[in-house]
Amino acid sequence: MEKEEMSMIHKNKTWEMVERPEDRKVIGVKWIRYNLIGANSEHPEGFVKQGEEDKVYLLEKAIYGLKQAPRVWYNRIDDYLLNIGSAKSLSKSTFYVKHKGNNLLIVSLYVDDLLVTGDNTRLVEKFKQEMMQVFEMTDLSLMTYYFLRIEIKQNENEVFVCQRKYAKEILKKFQMEECKFVSTPMNQKEKLSKKDGTDKVYEGYYRRLIGCLMYLIATRPDILFVVSLLSRFMHCASEVHLRVAKRILNYVKGTIDYGVKFERSHEFRFYGFSDSDWAGSINDMKSTSRCCFSLGSRVFSWCTKKQEIVA
Image (cartoon, rainbow, N blue to C red; front, top):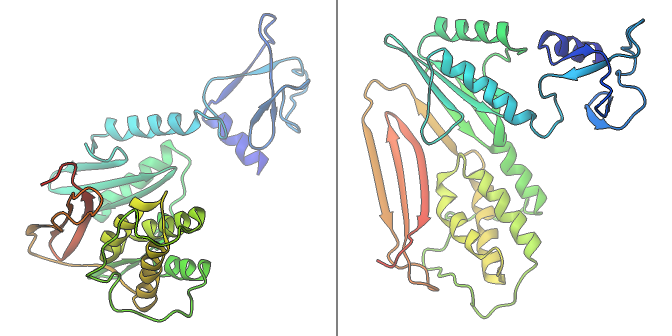
C-alpha cells in the first residue's frame, strides 16, 4: 500500500527533493495518512534515499489528509471538465453536461467518485479512458449502489432507484422492525404546533430519527412533506411529534420496496405540479408549498418548503 501511494505521489509530482533550507522550519511526515508533525526525520519511513539523507521534500501540491486537499481536488477536476467543453450546472456545482453533436454526456461528482452517463456508449467509454490517463481512477462498471445508500437496478428498458437496505437499517436502529403497517405516512387531520400540551422528549433521539428520515427522502417523495414538517420541531419536540415521526416508520415498514422507476420513453413532455396547505402552520399561519416535476416517464424532482410570508 505504501509503495502504491508513493508511486502516486511521484506520478502527480506532489513534492520534490531539495536541499534543506536554513531559514525555514522543517516538519516531518507520518506515514500513511500524512498527518504533519514535528519530527527529526523528514523522509517517510522505508523511503530514505541513500546519499540524500540530509535533503527534504518540498511540497508542491496538497496531499491526502490535509484540510485543503478536498478543495484542491475539486478545483483540479473542475478545471479539467470545463476545459474539455463541459458546462457546469448553475444550481449544482458538481453536475456537468457536455454536448457533442446530438449526443449528451453527463458527469456528477460526489467527493472523489464520479458518476458518468450519456446517450452514446462510445462517447462514455472514450471519456472514461481519457480520465484514467489524466487521473488515477478505477472503472467500477455499471452502477448498482451510490451515496446516501441508494440502490440502482438497471435493465434495458428501465432504471429503478430505491433505499430498501437503508430503510431496513432505520427500522432496526429505532427498534421498529416488528411494527405494524399503516397505509399513510401521516394522519390527514393531524395539526402540529410547538406547544401542544404534551411532555417534551429527548432531543437527541428525535433529531437522529428525523435526520435518518431526511436521507430517505432521496428516493421517497411520498414521505417528504411530513418529514419536512417534523424537522421544524427539532428543538422543541414533544410526545406528539415523536408519535407522528414513528408513524412514518410504520408506513415505511409496509412500503419497504418503494422507490422511483424510470422507464424508456419516446415522449419527453415536461410537467410541473404545485400545491399548498393554506396556512397550515398553527404557530405563524404560514402556508407550506409543495411541488414536483416530471419529464418523460417519471418524477425526477420534488420539494416542499414553508412560505416566507403569510398569504
